[in-house]
Length: 241
Image 1: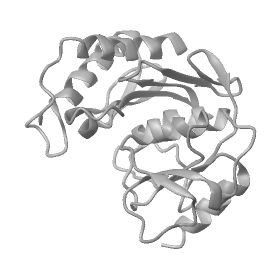
Image 2 (image 1 turned 180 degrees about the vertical axis):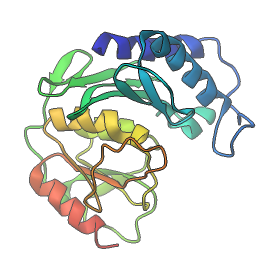
Image 3 (image 1 turned 120 degrees about the vertical axis):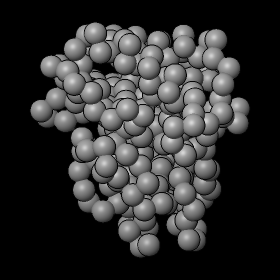
Image 4 (image 1 turned 180 degrees about the horizontal axis):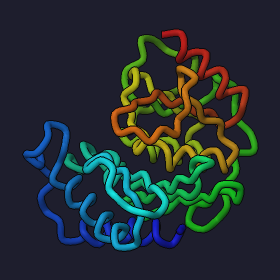
């Protein structure tokens, strides 16, 4: 399973090696030609293997195997403007929830992966958040515009929820807050959320809902912190608006 997800990410990398059109697809207002190319590459790899694919770009496909939740190109606006923060995200789901995950940074080539109960890795090396600063000393990645400072030391807005969450897992930032209301589909965060959880990061929905929802119309508001105390502080701050 893990190798299949890495192979799918490799297929996207290969497709982009000769890709030149980073503009709108013409199919949907928020879709780029690069989204379509990445989606096709993932399907071409996973469909013959029998997987059901739930993709941001093409919905839920038929298949007899496990479901793989996919964002073929998370951060496609960044990609369209040559801003170096975008990724491919894949998460296999079984009856117990998120099972196996891969997030591929398409700029640096860095790979994150995780298997439920077996830990998380960055470039094949296990990662674990052993500690977290207090909220007032934390560096937090955000999506959307907060109405006010939520008490953090500093914040950054990068533009790819999956890479933002992976940056919490590997220690580059301390937390993540979606400051928009229900702006993210399951494909945006599920793979990175499993990587975070296996690395000791607490991830939850701001409204207390299950993050693993295999409904292409459902949206969630993820919040993450490098430790329970920071996660709770960020969640409490986010629930305040």
